[in-house]
Length: 62
Image 1 (cartoon, helix red, strand yellow):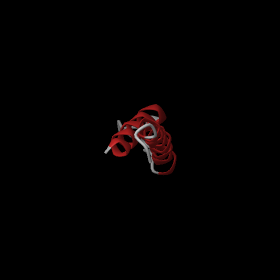
Image 2 (cartoon, one colour):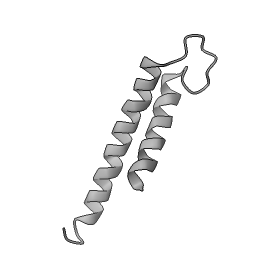
Image 3 (cartoon, one colour):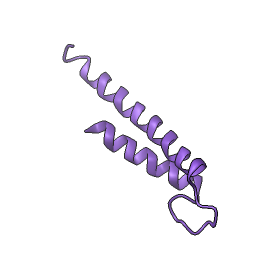
């Protein structure tokens, strides 16, 4: 691997982290969720997807 391939590799990791994290966050909403609607993180699909994206991006950048 050359030095020119590094930015593309890091960008690919970040994109994959965002996609997989978003899918995991939405999956958490669909599979676990919160039937009563009182759980602030898992009762809203947008919030749980955004949290998954942030976690996936953070994990991929390490």
